[in-house]
Image 1 (spheres, helix red, strand yellow):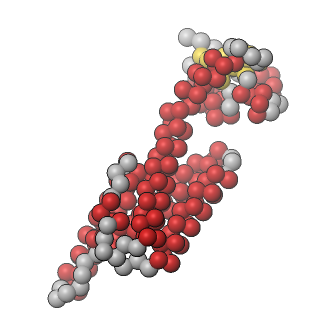
Image 2 (image 1 turned 90 degrees about the vertical axis):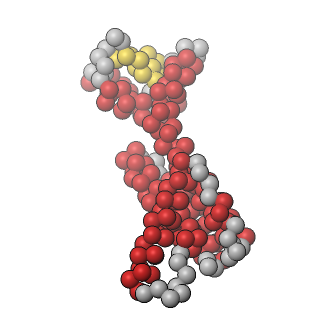
Image 3 (image 1 turned 135 degrees about the vertical axis):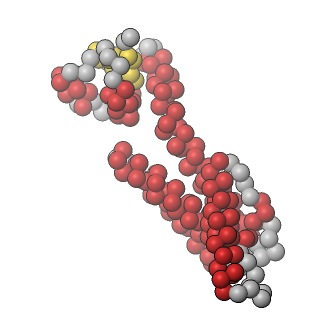
Length: 194
């Protein structure tokens, strides 16, 4: 059985991990915050779901009980990982020991897992979509167009503030995927000439 104080503590840790992610600004630290957020949410999921699968120590030998606990841990890990793919385990919240705080903690874990999945999907796939939208939007307002990525162009691009970066389209002459990705993560719209 999970005590209500543990459920409340789990909810506080989940919210704290999310706030840490939101307050992280540098790209290197942001990547680390994804990993930290994932590990914290995964650990919370295992803690929350383990009681659902934990063996009841009846007349088992210590070795049998140990194996049963390992299997329960694996099943809790599986359930926690499935939350990242959108599978909500309502069974954990419907246990006889599940009080309101526990039910809220299980639901908050599910929301945090889905939020992380959504954020990672946006980071991986959303940059190109956002780039296309910004190029279209930049066509209808004041903008900067930078052709090439030489030393002078890089110096000019570094001098821009965030608002100016969003209104800047960089046209690259070569298909340098790494430079393309770096410029996207800095906030520029990027076109590559073929």
